[in-house]
Length: 339
Image (cartoon, rainbow, N blue to C red; front, side, top):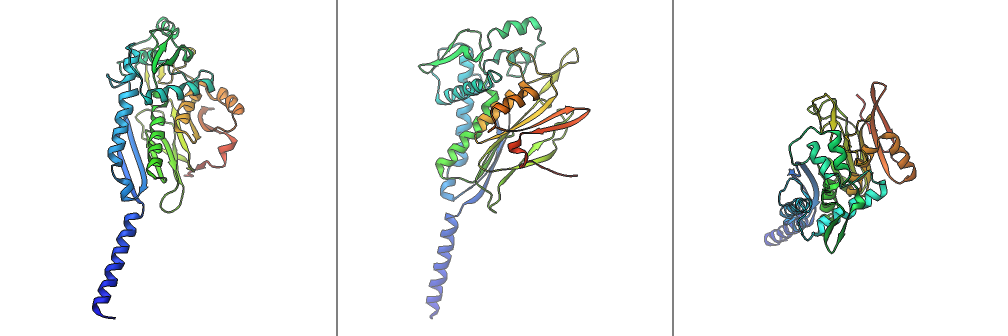
């Protein structure tokens, strides 16, 4: 074989190698801030698939923000809450439909019409005010997911004072929208974490499933996060909701959590500290986790007995220590780190 032939073969091998590399999925990581919290995304994509992903996701974040963010003064949801005659976009309609479906499923324990109460408690865009029982009763009469509907791409309210809040599903919904985008691009191996609302699909590059940890409740909102519980996700989502970080102490020394009971208008005060829900849809997990935090442990158990396909893990305080309850269909997948 001549020297020229050897060089030709070598060049051909290099060309094939670089061509193969260009077709092989590579690990990509995106981190940033969105919806008042963090996002962390890992996905495997070829260079062709990866073109414009970062910018496309930023555009998606902006679209969701423009539609359903209470912190964006010009958002559609704020215009709706101000009773302006605006045409709804597909994101708003999607969140509305999904929220109403979960409200029906939970018989109202999730209710997007608690916006005025959330605002009054100071868990929305406005500053916190001390709230009286008289004020709660006044606002409670405008709460009720059956009091609103969509007609011809516009919101129709029974009461003009009703305000909508999609925060109970917004981050889970965002995770689902990113997953939908990835599927459209042919990207099937990824994990998406929007402020703890996680959706995973496929596997890591070593063929192993994605692992997600469940945060251990803490005594203080400033305490460093710790984890001793985890599970593997196979084409599923997990969302954890808790009352141990988003709260304040009122002037009487009472703890006010961000979870508002749509039936009483009050901040919930039971011993349930957190609940993690596992299902394919992060939106459903997000809404159910909030609903369970309103129900409390015993009512949630009753609900789950009637819906045995739903998987959940509860952490609560009893007998001066942390206790857990896991639905039978999830128990075999929960793992604990032994110290």
